[in-house]
Length: 272
Image (cartoon, rainbow, N blue to C red; front, side, top):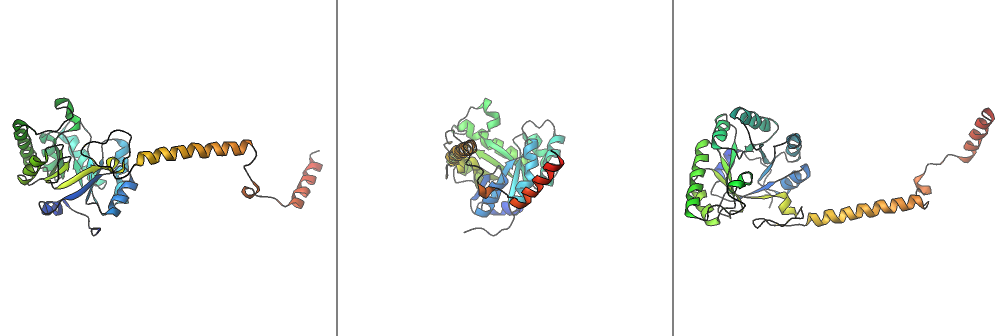
C-alpha cells in the first residue's frame, strides 16, 4: 500500500523512531526520484558535492515534491563557514536535510545554525585508508569506539547517522541507545531506516553487487541490449541510404507536377 503523499519533516521522523523501519533510496536522476515517490519510498538522498549535482537538486525536488530528500555535501569542507554556506544552499534549493561525513566539529557548527545534519558511522568510504573496506565493530574495542563516536555525533547535534556495514546485533543495540535515527546500510534491520542506492536496486552497473545490497532488476543488461539496438538501427539506416531504400515516397513532400513544369520553363527562359 502506498503511503499518503505527506512530506515528512525531521520532527515527523523523530516521532517515528522505534515504531517502524523507514525505506530510504539514494537517487541520481529526476526519473529515479519520481519513480521512488510513486512507489511510496519514505526517504531519499542525493549527491550535492559537485556543480552538476547541485544544479540537479532542484530537478529532483520538482520530480518528487512530496518526498524528504537529503543532499550529500562535498568531502573536505575546509571550515565551519563553508559547511554552513553549503548546508543552507542545499536547503534553499529544496533539500530537507544534509548529509555530512566531516568531523563532529563541522557538524556541530551546522547544527547550531539549525541545519538538519546526517552524520556517518561505521565504514566511511571516504576514510577507508584508516580501516580498509570491511565490517566495522566486530571486536569489543571497535564496538566501544563506535558507541563513543555515536554519542559524539549525537552531542554535536546530528539528527541522524548512516550506519554502514556494522554487525546487525551491535547495530540494533546502538540504535536503542541514541535519540538519533540510525540509517542502516548493510547493518541489519534493527535500525531506523533501510538504505540502498538506486544503482544497487536497479542493477545499474557491471561490477559485483556489494554483499549488503540486493538487485531487483538488471538495468546493466538492459543498457547493453539498448546499445546493441542503437548500433543495429544506425547500421540499417546507413544501408538504406546507400542502397536507395531511404527516403521512400511516404517520407517526401511532392510539388504538383504541372506547377513544377511551369516554374522550370519560366526560370529556364530567364536563365538560359
